[in-house]
Length: 596
Image (cartoon, rainbow, N blue to C red; front, side, top):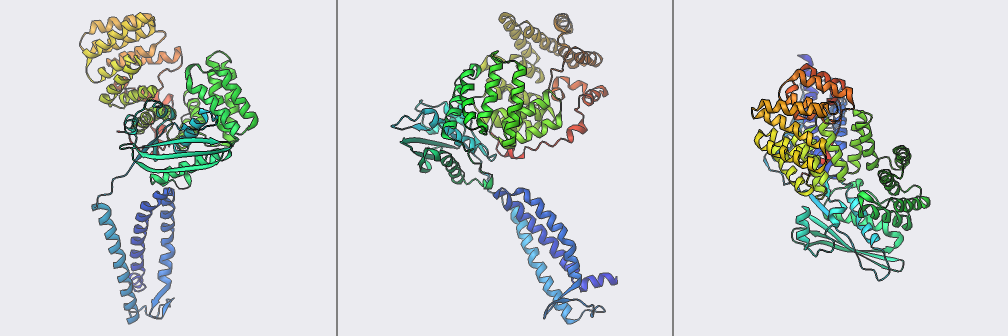
């Protein structure tokens, strides 16, 4: 009791209350203000400092006394009872605490009862810049300038930036900006015109509201051809200012090189864009080799050299061993210069996941790739598949949505999103996305049938699988036609047609069981015949590598999940719940923008 009275006399309790309330108020303000300047990671620092500061604050409150003559060391002279000075000091602290509590209460009421202003999320497409030069400025340089500005803006996770291909697809169509914005699903458009006069260049850029075509701002940027990189930086910076995006120090800068190297790299990139599946690999390689001879440290040329080598291997110009050797050398050179290169980390992540089976390494590489390139549809597509594989369904759905928003023309993004929605249990959305994919590509019917099956529409699934079987047989793909029988076996089981289900499964086992035992296990699992399902599941390991990379999420094996043997399989393959829970795959920045 005496200690309590002494704490009270020395105002330690009042100081403690004032400190705690003040600290809470400071943390609330920090959490509100710091993220606006890209400093959200300092909130934890603020909390740590305030927590540590509590102890010395209490020590000072005990040791010092606030008197009318000022602050002095408390000698304990009035320890026996409160004097007039102690009473006045206590009242001062009471008033301070009341003021702080009033401010804290006002903040709490405002934060909880006043509805926040709706968060504004922007999206933008950089349209191809027109070439208005009387001199012979190559079109690829004008396009390249627009593409480079796009790539700079794409580094910002809080801004959704449309990929180059869909943005450039409207060239020459004469569409109104409002129509282009509607088709791309963006809030803003950046247009531009490039004029070269001798060694001088002028770029006229304009930021437009996509809904009505009104200009947010229009500005001319001038300089020599050597200033083109600084002009790119300036345009990107003005876009972020025009959209009131708090990029802070995170706004990237264009990688510098000579204009000649830039031109050579852009020419090589154009060869790829003109025909991805059958690029002129030899010409592309020659251009990139020339660029890297001039500037050996220009990483964009190295990245495109990786793609050129991939194309060369596909065309039979080099072996897989040669491609692998070249890839490792180029990747090492790139990361030595640019440690956070998203394209390279995406490739490393794929290698770690599907070749080395190293979940931890894949997690780290995908996270680095996403932080570096939050608006790259290919990286988002691969990362969304990985997120589903490790059980992070919400993140997988968010990234697949963003991949489609970033590249509305990406049919592979559409395909992956439909499958991710199916595996995540969003069956209506999955069916709608797969129907769109089929209308564009004329393929993908088997999984469309599985979606019908999972929805309980077995009769409709039978129709889909029958048509797929006939289509694949006519096209000369017996394996795919056989796979349709797997779907039919499951659908007939659901319809109570057990004999037909058994007959189809027996035919499949005779024709393909040795080659594809996992498909047989899938039918038995769907029918609830667990012992046979596990027997065939284990055969898959004996006959070849595991083809089902998203095993853990596959809903067709759901009836096995409550069996201890399933947990053992996941443990053997490194997908135990404990291991997955330990993975840190942060994608919070990427989920700031959700496509409607």
